[in-house]
Length: 102
Image (cartoon, rainbow, N blue to C red; front, side):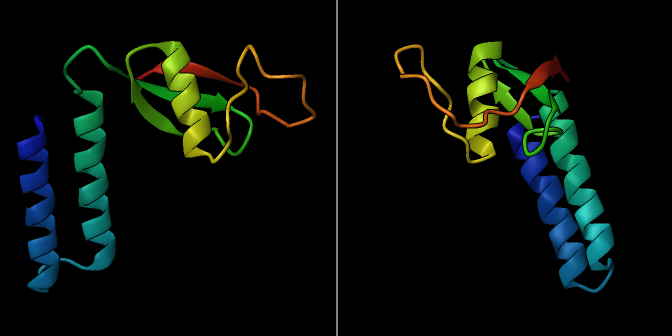
């Protein structure tokens, strides 16, 4: 599914909600399904990765060109600044997690 198709499907779901044809939970389900389909069929050099591990990163899904970039994006999405090689040692807790391609 390309971006335009995804946007049209989300728009259709919102229109059905506005017209009283669908309730909020059904609209949420439809929009989530569109996003899930869009993400898993993502075209291009980037891939879709899911974090599996400790909270608050477990289950986060990101699009990135590589595993290292995906790791950084997962941490950023969780509000955690990743450590850099040049950073001094720190007591900050960085959750442990693996990445799986979706």
